[in-house]
Image (cartoon, rainbow, N blue to C red; front, side):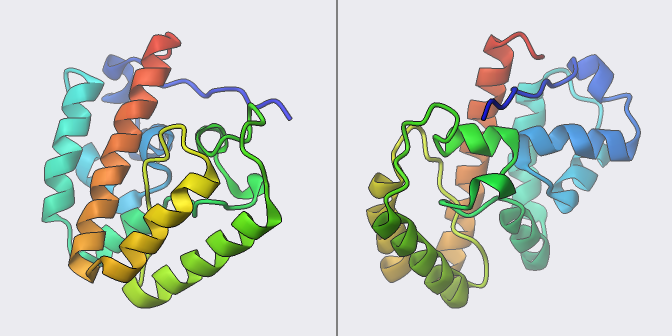
Length: 178
């Protein structure tokens, strides 16, 4: 399966899009996270995508707890079936290059841990994979599940979303997409 990388419009184009088009474009960086997209849309203009990402960090801090969870839950679960992932998540989780083994035991462990994490904290586990295998993510998920607090995990998840968005921007920029 070949997945093409989507493209971000130039920042000058982005800031002049309609609210729904703006939200669609931001999904490339943050998945579909309406509370964040709406707040960023209201904060236009931006001189660069870096400025937009910087603003998103301050917006995260001002969102209500419910909106923070909505933003976190926009991200796919680690180990999510391939067909449920955006093109960028598909690549980030290693499916595009085939370097991510789908060891049934690892996948079953991730499903179990994701379920336990969501039951404990009330939102999805988000981690910046950064090239690590699913097997390498298992102990990270275990540690955060067993040692984390709800507030700490919410903040950690949001920080990881920013790291993911910055990495996506870097990759899209180096591909000439901005």
